[in-house]
Amino acid sequence: MGLDRRRVLAGLGALPMAGCASFPGPDRPRTTVWRFGDLASIDAPLTIEGAPRPVAGPASVPGGALQFDGVDDALFIDRHPLAGAATFAFEAVFRPDGGAMEQRWLHLQSDEDVPAGQTPVGTRFLFEIRVYGDAWALDAFVKGPTYNQTLLFPDKRHPVGRWYHVAQTYDGTTYRAFVDGELQGEAALAFTPQGPGRASVGTRINRVNYFNGAIAEARFTPRFLRPDQFTGLNPA
Image (cartoon, rainbow, N blue to C red):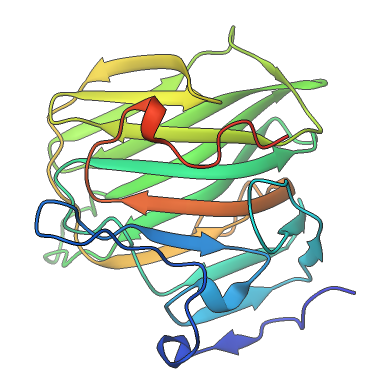
């Protein structure tokens, strides 16, 4: 059975936060973990649209996963968990199941004060995929006032229908994308921290390019991580 259509969860800070981890000390900033099989792990108001349904997840992620139908299933979350981060590691565990070529499945968007007559920058992070029959390629994207960078390498394809760990990172100079710890590509980037905002899961924040598959976890670390420091590798 799917989840109730367009249900809002608020005040989750009062619930046990089994899905959130933190690193003590001023040089180890807090890591935020969202586990989609356990929506109480998402420490922000949450709106559910469509009927995403709980499913079994990979052994590496407690609590299962959430299945999205590629049509109108989505979550909207009132938080940008990488706001203020000068370096970062943005990880996720997901299972793409094929379908439409362009699928935008995890979106962090900054709220912007836009003067009259000016066009918004559209400051954001995105995890997307491009589907080629029974295979897919990762599309990582970041945009802000001083940067606009896509990491998409269509020759680096992976079979649909299994669990993967993906990541995008920034170490202060270089933006990188990974699948199961393997580098997909990189680019120099003049990144500046993004401001507070919102997130969408299962679709782009303006409700286009819905995702067909399941998502188990997203992990947001406001500091750089090497691939050997990623969590949730080899989820299959």
